[in-house]
Image (cartoon, rainbow, N blue to C red; front, side, top):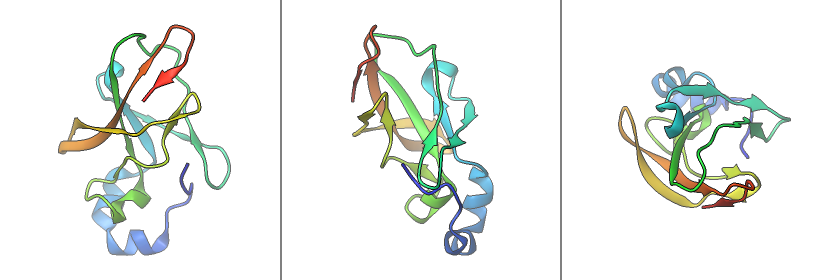
Length: 115
């Protein structure tokens, strides 16, 4: 849950970060942390669907959001993120431009998520 338009004030204050993030996206551990663009689902919600998340083991992901450049020098966001309706709260290290904050969770076979 986050604005789907880049705040012009953030872009003016942190232009290199905003340009580096480019579009709001997710880096997924189970996909070697490659970037996947999120889809805007209205003015305050992003979405991405994965059908191949490994079950029963810790997974880590990192959201890159241009608006998060105001809070993190790399645009990594750890707030307002949910998986299958469960808010993710466990902040962990992920690889990026050095170590960047991400979120950890575990998925059960029936799709429930433990943050």
